[in-house]
Structures are given as structure tokens and as C-alpha cells.
Amino acid sequence: MTENAYTRRDDDSRSSDGRGVGRMTGTVLVTSGTGKTGRRVVERLAALGVPVRSGSRSGEVLFDWQDDTGWEAALRGTEAAYVAYYPDLAVPGAAEAMAAFGRTAAACGVRRVVLLSGRGEPQAVVAEEALRGAAGAVEVTVVRSAFFAQNFSEGALLDGVIGGELVFPAGTTAEPFLDLDDLADVVVAALTGDGHAGAVYELTGPRSLTFEQAAEELGRAAGRPVRYVPVRGPAYASLLEEFGVSEEEAGFLAELFATLLDGHNAATTDGVKRVLGREPKDFADFAREAARDGAWHG
Image 1 (tube, rainbow, N blue to C red):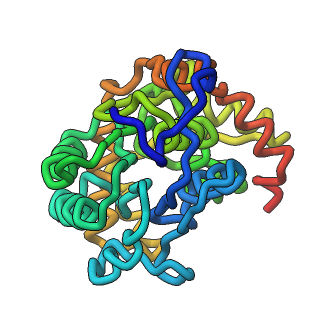
Image 2: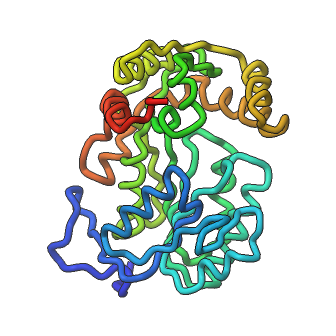
């Protein structure tokens, strides 16, 4: 890739795996900037002195995946963007949204896009390709993530940990839970450094655990028993509806989890180490840190 103000670096500025670490001078748009991954990316970019726009439906930089009329204003004048599509790249309409975003980014002169995707999601791959196909000369890097560890401390499973029962349709399938601090570090490396254009990184934690094993780890960290309660997809969808999730979304989520947790995602990868030159955080370390920070004091 040619040298420019966005990627300029000193000759001795290298990451531990030999990739150049760009000294970004351009502005980065972070879509879903107040979400679990977006806010971590915003914090890291700001700490590096990178100008950043945190896009959201109600913030200073308006960005709504359901209303593309504001996308151009959010992207105009930016050099790069972190794309975290809500609710998921596998939902109907996601590929069309990615194509529209790619066209808008290219028209606005964006040079680099890092896309958050789901590991082992065939429909998400369709959305990835739609973005690449529409973005033209824009550099696109895809980060495919395993199940977030922080879903137990910040997401839908938080109340289950606090209440002592994790009800989820995972059966005995193992999952290599990924800490979002690792994911955010990879995203920032791809946004600010050279050598990532066109790459697809599959990110996992260092070991795979069943949900029953994860519940045991969470219980040890929280200092009280946490029990995993397996349920089938339809029962889980009904449970979500009881908590106010629409029938359509509940059905989609139950089907998605059935697809993801059939065993094909159980293996770990070296994606985090490839990018950052270090091992990813272990689930037990995540749990201890979350407990220390008061995640389960409810």
C-alpha cells in the first residue's frame, strides 16, 4: 500500500509480529459507538490521540443503521470506519445495508473499513462480500468474533449470572469465548496499522468451554453458585418473548444460536496472536476482572 498521511510511520515503528503500526492522523467513524465493542474502540482510539466520531442514534454524531440518510454526514471527512452492524450481519437486509454503506464510504473518500462479523455465520459472509463488492478501492478488513465473554457481564446473560441460573440453548457444545478487550485491540490495530487490507481474522479465546463450565468459572469469580440450565430453541424464544423481545426477533435469535452452537465453532484460533503478538485473555481472567469491577453485584 502506498504511503500517505493516514498510514505514515517511522521506519522503526513495528508491532511484535513485524507489521507496521500506522500513525493515523485522519478521523475514524465508529458505528454503534456506544455499544459493547464500539465504546471500547472509541476509548482506545482516543487514548492514541486519533480523532474519532462515535456514531449512535442519539449522540452528537447521528448514525442509525435503519436510516441511511445520515450516513454521508457521519462519514464525510473521515479516513476510516469501524462497522458494527446492529442487530447482526445474519439478519435479512444486512447484506443490502452493507452494500449501501460500502458505496457511501467510497463516495466519501474513506480509505479503510474494519467490519465486525460473526464466526461461522454463512449469512454474515454474504454481508461481508456485499460490503467488499460495493466499497471499491476502500481497504476492508473483516474481524469474525467468537461468542463475547462480556455477554455474561454486560449483555443478555448478565441477569442470569446475578440470579444464579444461566438459561441458554447451547447444550453441551463448547465455545472459545472471546474477551472484548482483545477484540477492540485487534480492531484498533487493523484501523491504525498497515498489513491488514483484505485480511479476515477469526478471533477466539485461548480455550473452549461448555456453558456449564463457563457457569462454574463465573460462580467461582462471583463467589456464589451459578448453574447452567440448557433449553431448546423454541423454549428459549418463548422466554425471550416474556422479556419483551418481539416474536420475530426471538425466533431469529433462537435459530441463530442453534446455528452457531452446533459444534462447528468449538475450535480455537490464533487470530489474536497473529495481530497482536500475544495470547488472548482466558475466560477465568475475564470472570475475575468482571467480578472485581462489580459486574455481578446486583
